[in-house]
Image 1: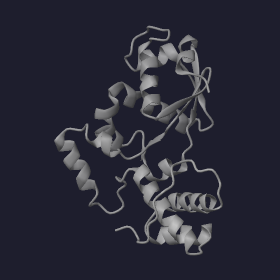
Image 2: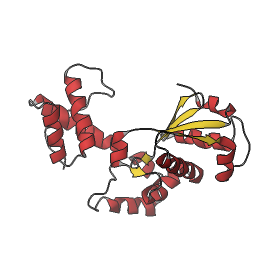
Image 3: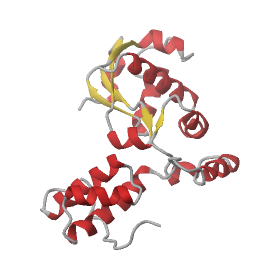
Image 4: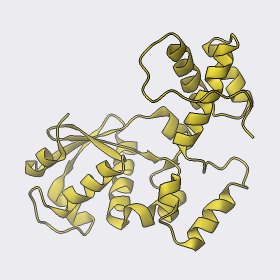
Length: 215
């Protein structure tokens, strides 16, 4: 994979959507009020503006698009300086640091069009008023505020237990869905558990086993 530094010499950058079915199902559109309210203090205004602009561009062109570096920088109020230390490239770098984007080639990036719910470490950076507001969302039916990494951890624990009890991937996924896991995440966790028990390489450390449904 190319490094971020290689983007600095390009006048045009190719942008494509970073496809992540779980984040897209459980997260928040980059142009949403959730992102504007809660991700803004973490990522900063220029990063949010760039993500919003790219999400809109990819909504209009789902197969990808090209952005003019100098024009985009001026449109976002980031100045016209070019090169590897250009403000726009630093903003792209912040997206990469927070796993909102990744460099996929010498002049190409993949960008999330949906952002995950804030993780606990990010919530800690919010002012108290916003932490309180975020906590209130947990009481709203259907809101998605639990960090996806935590939901995935719980789902994998439960899926492993279900597989150990004799369920196949479809059966485990159905049971997870009954326990109110999103179907996309339920299917991912069930498939992971079956492959883990078959001895396939895991993408993460082994999950602890659990025997109870989530509370």
